[in-house]
Image 1 (tube, rainbow, N blue to C red):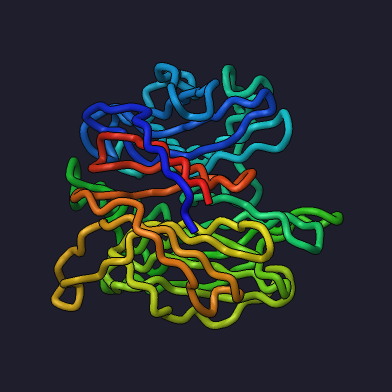
Image 2: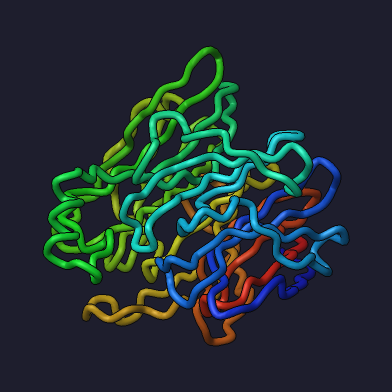
Length: 341
């Protein structure tokens, strides 16, 4: 049950979106998000860090994590491993064309950053999402990637010129899966490919390991109105067929967080009203669901807020009975939630 909830504002400007949260080795909370410009994608998009020394009560002013070189910048994931923090960045021309992937690393709790090059297997056209460490001792790093070609890049620039954006390209599918690290292994394992003949798909996979060792991927499938799921029973190496769940979704990124005693939390906006008629469902209310039986059922469905607006791109951590997470509201405000269970 929910014992208490605290909500604080981190930042507001014309565009503030897609925040990520981590706990640094010095005890500070670190939030990284995209700001700059008024839309996404936009040539003015940049990525900034915010620090909190008082468990989210107050936050520092924004500080850039990537040196200014004229490229648009977007961050898809933030990981903390002791003294090493990694921000997975997308660099692009302002329209997600010429899309390159780099890892920025910090060894001083997010105050200074250095370029560590592209992530394994994925130098371009890929979003990296939050990894988990499995009971086998390996780390699984989820990804979504697109088979974009130089020929298609040239075509869209030629035919659409200044209106060309990546989501208008004739890219056949969105591939999701994991990169497996540990025990001497560094391998890529595909989970599924979502066909994009009817429109662009951002799968935005989120992972959780269940008590029996099953690894679950939940994914957004744009315009479907539902979350989709794949399971792996061998530590992420092979995956079941991608199937539609009974969890409503308004084309919004879900977030799974492992709690204690085998419980799994899902933070999302379970609303697909109107999507059967091709309309865009509202991204509220914001809810916290908790499963105690390996995601077969959801014993608790806690409404965190039903204040109207768009709640998108949740990211967070679980520690000492608290689910701490960040989320964007209406594309211009970053909020911090502390939900004490």
